[in-house]
Amino acid sequence: MKQEKRSRILLRLFLSTLSLSAFTFGGGYVIVTLLKKKFVDEYHWIEEAEMLDLVAIAQSSPGAIAVNGAIVVGYKLAGMIGAIVAIIATIIPPLVIISVISVFYTAFRDNFLVSKLLQGMQAGVGAVIASVVWQMGADVVRSKSTASLLIMAAAFAATCFFGVNVVVVVLVCAALGVVRTLLHRKEDL
Image 1 (cartoon, one colour):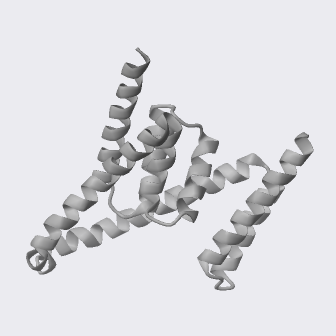
Image 2 (image 1 turned 60 degrees about the horizontal axis):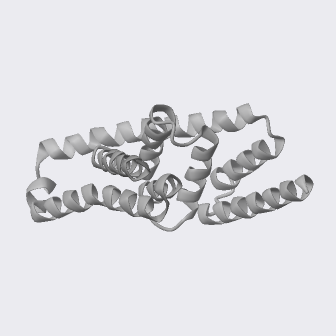
Image 3 (image 1 turned 60 degrees about the vertical axis):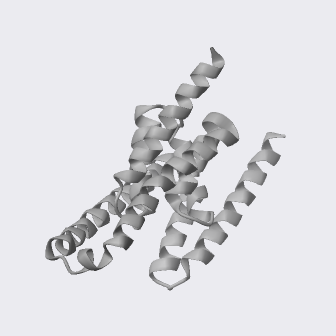
């Protein structure tokens, strides 16, 4: 019975990550909203706070955000086999699409309709990314954590006003997160 339940979860995980990967245009930040809708809101596999952690891990880890996010969810649900299933399902659609595009590249490159379609998709991607930033920023504000608000504001200012490289901002925020976690653990003891 337990094996049957695990098999169903793995199948559902595979189909979910496959469909998200297949029908998401615009890169990793776009898929974050869809991951939240599917895994937090619809399936209730992870909590909202875990989703924020997932995004932080996915962004700070090397590789595509979609794959990194799928790894975290897959591992949480079914261990290493879940992570592997999620990886395979996430990479199949881009692999197939890129293979097809590479075969027909010259026809796609010069096609007026395809060119305009891609331009329109860029506008939609911008809106989805803005929505993700708004939702995640609102979650930090609702948490009423002064430290989190200061970190968020400092990261924004460092990147937008002072031109600090995003990699440096992510590394500093990761270090701050480690320090905060260690301090909270010390307080709990």
